[in-house]
Image 1: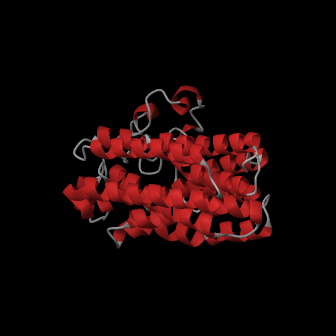
Image 2 (image 1 turned 90 degrees about the vertical axis):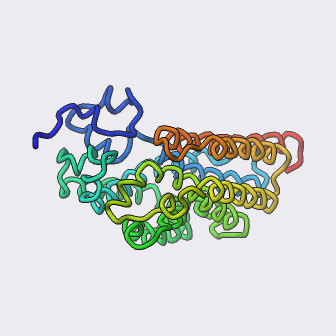
Image 3 (image 1 turned 60 degrees about the horizontal axis):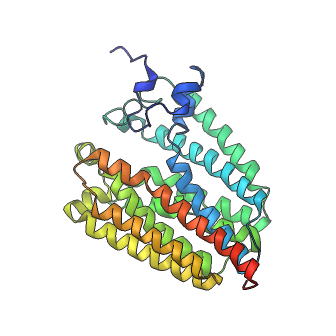
Length: 318
């Protein structure tokens, strides 16, 4: 069968007219798609827990703003490591992806990137992530390396459990620990509670995302919370989101957050409630939009923390 040559039409869940399709040279475009640089929502969802944790740590010690250098390091690290993780995931899942309509156009199953070249590309991205990690203290370096076991097993979880989203949450939200440790060189109750909340948040939004593939997954013998929860998805996602917001509130209390943070958290609760109330699991476009809207959650909570830090410093409360 002849491969399609219009690469801009191959990636089903990429936004039309994204910068990769519009501006990237043809030779590098498949690699940027492999790293999901045309679909950055995943990198944002990886980054925000890092920024939240960093801001909570700085708030707890009375700083008026987070360390800007650390914010930049986490941003670079999130984007390159998400790219490395997606590359590894696509190598592992290449045979399955080629049999699913939404993923058949990805660079490896479509034949635009070989497995060897994908592996080399993933190694380059991983080395870039390592270069970022070693800028932090020794405890944070060790903590970052400790996440690699979860990264390694995650792509295989959909073969053995209906709860791969839980493993994704444990893996993808590790940054909720790293931000705090980058400041203090150790962990405490606040980042641990923040991390647990982020894990539940991930299970919720990735269950929504997984409903796009549930028919194909069932035919291929793959598992997901979308298949496990079925028509009860809205109730379960509501529970995951409510528990996540409650844990984030506890993390804020433990870190000494003030009213502005809890106001932002209330707005986050409204956004999460909108996702649940308007979710149509039979409509892939509906699911994708609600999944992507979690970037709004990330920004709202982060900006709430920034405002809390700044206002508290000005008022002499911190």
